[in-house]
Amino acid sequence: MAHAQRASSEGLLCLAVALTTPLSSTLCLTDGLSASFRVSFMNNQKQQKPTLTGQRFKTRKRDEKERFDPTQFQESIVQGLNQTGTDLEAVAKFLDASGAKLDYRRYAETLFDILVAGGMLAPGGTLSDDMTRTEFCLFTAQEDLETMQAYAQVFNKLIRRYKYLEKGFEEEIKKLLLFLKGFTESERNKLAMLAGILLANGSISASILSSLFNENLVKEGVSAAFAVKLFKSWINEKDINSVAVSLRKVGMDNRLMELFPANKRSCEHFSKYFNEAGLKEISDFARNQQSIGARKELQKELQEQMARGDPIKEIIAFTRDEMKRAGLSEQAMIGMIWSSVMSSVEWNKKEELVTEQAIKLLKQYSPLLKAFTSQGLSEFSLLLKIQEYCYDNIHFMKAFQKIVVLLYKADVLSEEVILKWYAESHQTKGRSVFLEQMKKFVEWLKNAEEESESEEEEAD
Image (cartoon, rainbow, N blue to C red; front, top):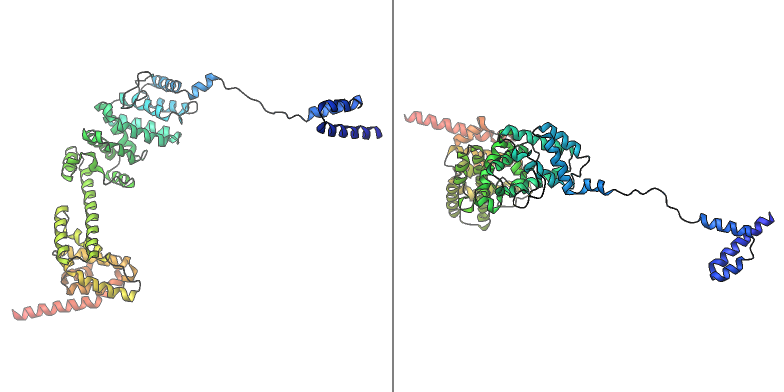
């Protein structure tokens, strides 16, 4: 026991001295230590050395090349397509299985170029000469809708299986549209049909159409011709409502005119072109969008004129000119005028004051309203707009009857229209509240009408 304690003390002393003493001195000091201690000390030193755990594997160049070399990737895809041939079911299965072995994420553009054009595309849309190609691709397929629908299924299955390809596929379509001049007419037709089917099914976004507004494509008429084929296949798959919703979603519902050069960018030219192509739905949609755009601009200008306090006669003259230029009906115009008038002031938030404020404003603009209610339908449209406005703006709920009476006295709304509205043609919005408000006034109108009729009979 004493021997063990002494050996331990000597070991600690030696270690302390070794850390603070030059090597030569340390060697001298340790000469006097026992042989058994020196062996023990050296073993302890060996045990304190750090060790590495685990194994390291060296990746073989051959394996790395298959996964990350673009040439090898292309050869693998081309070879697989050559083996499957025109059997699109086999193509879909091959692409599904290859995604586990090949790097689709890195080479998405290469993959889609091959599936569409048969090989890698150089800038401008020509096939690269130094790459392997396949004759089994979209551009070499039959030019008919049924075949394009089958190809659309191949792309849909691939993207559903490998979701990360979705964005890359949209970018590919945008690129292909910019390359349209480099393709043959038949290739463009096939691509247009495929894009229309994919748009109808929601596989790609309508934002891809931005590529068609390229100046060179527009100038040479390529964009408009491509759009005809695309919209035909789109509407064949779904309907015009699908087109309208998708275009509005990406803010392109007002940009279809840009398919034509500036000197041909008119409703008349657009309608003629698409009507002759058998796409009246697109023609009507574009015309309606242009009308909506014109209405927004007109309403904005009306509000600015009212804010400036322009004379009523000038506002009437301006509005008539714009209504004629835009081809708007009086019924459409009176609704815009009503909205402009009611948007021209900041309303009081107190219900008891807002009615007084409204009456004052409408007295001022009653000549403007009268100028655009020369027809019974226009009067009726205005009355329904008033009902809708008072219902949607809670502070105006009690003002409805007073507004109608004011406009009746100003010869804006006629007795016949008010009675018709009361009897059968009112909206459901706030119906019971507004009918109750109008009850006494309608009774007065009926009595006045009966008195007038009896006076006429006595006169006869």
